[in-house]
Length: 363
Image (cartoon, rainbow, N blue to C red; front, side):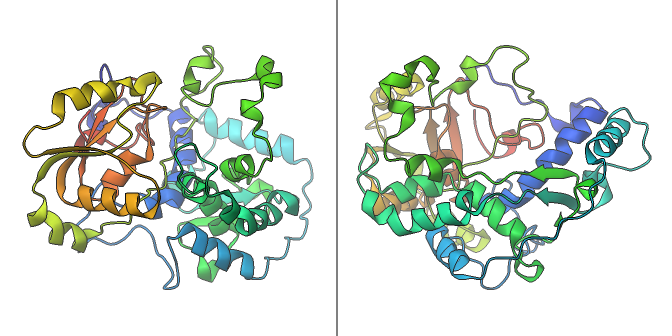
């Protein structure tokens, strides 16, 4: 990735109060996304897992959604006497921010405490149920013929966050994040919102409507539309994509190590617009070179199997820009035990202020 530097964590300045606050906020999202991002820093078979999953836990989006909607809904929490919460919480946060409080930030003090706002059922259960009952009718909605539920699965992190937070304690995937019922006890406030699912359930997708062009913002490269001061990078956290391929765990990595006879692998669209124009140049330079596999991708289950098989046979996996600076391919490579080679000028990586990406990818 041209012009992008990732300073070593060992040389960063001592964390300020605002930095500690940003890390605390990121901690929740890191922990809840961990079940789909386990191999970012591959661990040995002996290391203790960060995620304590129940025996019945599933990583299939549709299977999990079916099980979730079939289970009884958790009862709404009783309203706690809130008092003048706004002033109390503001005073507490300002004291922590300016270092005037003896209480440590949750990242150092123990479990992260989360207050989950209870949204009207039409925005949560009804929305998920509508998608579950209709996704099979939209197989050809995406431009490349891929079933739409595969695209939504790729962006399903908001579902996993909410489903785990409201689950009974015995069924939680993570044990180091707790849900609190009183706002004044919370370190972080979470508002459930299913972005991609709600978008694809629209009869007419508003972002493509010409009559709304006066308020239309591009879905891609949106960082270009913000002016200085409109985005606060210390608190804005980028979440990883949910991988499209199956997780290759430590045992799988060991078993495939001797079978990785491909030096560099890429499977996907060979021609893209915007920043993805680099793909055609890479194809011209690399196609036909010994030990390098560059091939056009295909949608659906067959394409998934081919991509997964290729990544598990490769040492390096090419991850060029596409319609956006990043894609799920980067995270597919990571969970396949294949070292990503990133070619993108404007890529912002998830948790890059915390994780040293130089250990797991080439940019």
